[in-house]
Length: 445
Image (cartoon, rainbow, N blue to C red):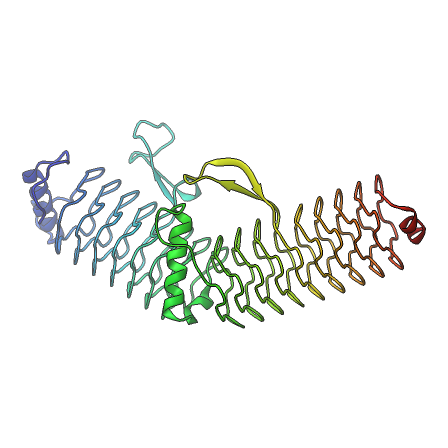
């Protein structure tokens, strides 16, 4: 039972009566009654082995509570809060936890099997569009939040986890077998020994390969996710400088803003990785898979990207936010100055306004790429494939386009002064407003 209730609408006697009546209800007694404690506030209290299975507790506040060993199975917890609570060994089996908040909670060996943690939202009871309980469900509501929670050895087998937030959670040896986690986010979560058998992850943000990384690296990734999500007030920025991560499976890894200068990532799988504003200067990414990666605002100056696969990667300018997530009106462009991109694949990539000055893209494939407003001054694009690529408003001063395949390329208002277009194929190219000097006028005629 709990301590004296001081900040709830129920008195201590009323709460005790409700719990005892519920225990008789569970036992099938005639005088028993289901506990109805919706929207009550029990924050900061201590309970142990409390039995409220099947109770009606929607919108209840159990934040910072001690709930070790409690039985909350098959209960209605729609929109409830357990933020920073301790609930080791507690059972939420088959409970309705849509929109619930477990941020920063300790849930070691907790049981969530068959629970429903899909999005949900508590609203005012007078809202005419709500049902009698004042609830919304489905995509309109907030996602269940388990970010930063310690879920070691917990079980979510068969649970509904669609769009749930597990960012920076510790899921070591947790069981998520058969769970429906479409659209869920596991950025920075620790997945060591996690059972993902049969889990549905369509549209989820997860990097299963990080489970094979050393424990200290997984801990760094977890603290980094906390640092990003808290705008720097919690966790710590990942410092992975000169680390050897060659050929590692880092698909979808959450490293936005991380320091990776000089890291060895050649041959690594970074497909769909989140590397926004990351510092990748002088990083070895030769033969790396960066397909669909988010590199907006990243610094890749002098990086080695020889034969790297960057198809559909995104490197557009990044809107900069302040310490509280507010818009600053500033943008950070993606930087690839002096980067080695020989024979790299950038087909369908988006690097608008990016800096490629003095970069080597010889024999690279950039078909259908989006490079409007980008800076390619003195870049080497010789023998590259640039078919149907957009270079509108781009700076190509002094660029080497010798032998490039530029069929149907878009060069509207681009500056090609002193660019070498010898033997370049420009069939169907759009040269409207393009700046050309006499030499390259002759070579493109």
